[in-house]
Length: 183
Image 1 (tube, helix red, strand yellow):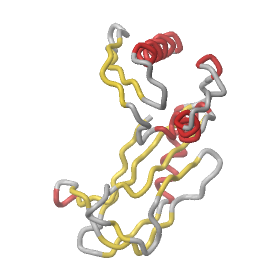
Image 2 (image 1 turned 30 degrees about the horizontal axis):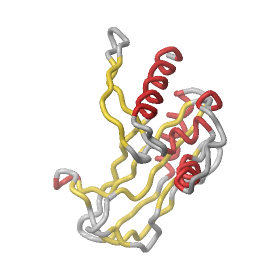
Image 3 (image 1 turned 90 degrees about the vertical axis):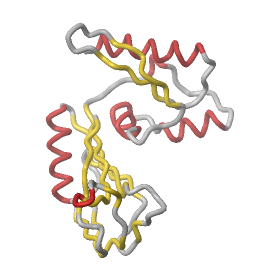
Image 4 (image 1 turned 45 degrees about the vertical axis):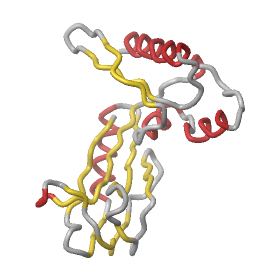
């Protein structure tokens, strides 16, 4: 709820101030569902793969802000300026082999057509049709992020966008793409 979110945000900011931290980062908490108490879990001093979720609900480009701070610029906003609008969800699209315990798959992408972007749908990827999924890199081939005014709307857009994805691999290992949902 908004009160818990505010308290968690205040604790995250207090932690960053206590260690003079000046960059993008993520503070994670564990929450007790029964008592609504929360406990510090860890701080990651980098952007996480889920940062587009935050970008979509705040309207902020976190990568741009991180680069500006690293360059020595002051942030053009305060914590009070950061608002939350709607809901966002993210799926990681991974090349994995379900017959080998979901180990990373390698091979050529003979078809890669992500869903159309816009209207609350965003796709972050670095692969292309005809490109190779190498054994030397992470098997994540795309992130699919959706935004909606409600949680249900964001989930419905996520399902429709996943249905619109077209991916085919050539090679003995690319036969399955898994999606991990984050929100």
